[in-house]
Length: 402
Image (cartoon, rainbow, N blue to C red; front, side, top):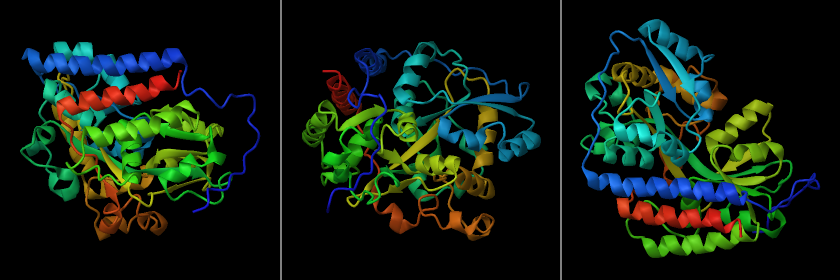
C-alpha cells in the first residue's frame, strides 16, 4: 500500500522532536517503578487493610473518580444522573482524576496501604490495574446480590463469577484501540499500524501511555495474538526493540494518557494510536467528521475499564446502587450512544430502537460479533510479567530524552 498522503501546514514555532521533557520522563518512570516496587513488596507482607464501615444508610452520596472521556455519562448535566439521584436520593460527584492508571495509583497508594479513605467511593481503572488493587487488598468486595441487573451483561464482559477480579470489580466501559487520523491532513487514510511509520508522517504521530493499548496494537501488527498464552518475554522484548527507534528518531511525537487527544486537536499530531470513543467525542465537539478511526487490518485491541470500591470508602451500598442503575438496558443504551464507548450490557432491539439509527448502526459503539472478532484482549499477565513488561515500557519513555 502507498504511504498515506499528507497535507501539512508548516509547523508554527513548535519543535517536532521531544516526546517529553527529560524531567517529566524521569518522573513518569519513577512513578511506574515505584508502583511496581510497591506491588512487589506489599504482596509479600501479608498485611491487608480492612474495609471501612459502610454508612450509606445515613449518607446518601458518593464520589466517582473516572476519566474525562466518561464525564458526559455521569457529569452533573447528564440527564441520566439526575434520574438516578431523583430515584435513589443519592447525590453523585464526578471527577476526572483517572487520567492515567499509574499516576492515579501513585497519588492514592499511601491511603490505600493504610485502608484510609482516598476521597473516592468508586474508581474507574483499567482491568489490569484493578487486578493489582484487588491482589493487594485495596478494593472492597462488590456484592452480586445488590447488582440485580448483572445478567444483562454480555458474556464476553462478565468474566468468571468465581474470579477475584469479578468479586471486587464490575465492568464499566469497553472499546476498541486502533488507528486514527485527521481526514483533512491525511486524506488517503490509514488502514494499518505500519502506515503510521511512513516518512511523511515523521514527527506527527501520537500514542497512548497505556502499555496494553500501544504495545498491544503494535504486537498485533507484528502477527502476535495478544490474547494467547503462546507469547512471552521474547516477543514482548522484540516489540519494545522495534518501538524504541521510532521514539528516538522522532517518528512518534508524543506518548500520553488521555491527553493524547489534545495533540490531535492542536494539530501537532495528525495521526495516532487511539481509542474509538475518544475520536467520536472529538468529532462531536467540532460538529463534523474531522478525524477518522479504523480497526487495523491485523486487528485492534479490545479493552475494558472496570469499577472498584476503594478499601476506605464508606459508601459501598450507594456505589452498588449506582452500578446497578447503569446496568439497566435502557440506561446502558443511552450512555453508550452519548459517550461512543461500548457498554458491557447486551443490546436488545426495544432499547436500541429508542436512539437515532445512525448511532445504533455504528458498530464501534454497538458491535456485532463479527466486529468483536476483529479485535483481541491483551491476555492477563502474571505479577512477575507485569513488573518486567512495565519496566521495559518505561525505557521507551526514557529513550525519548536521549
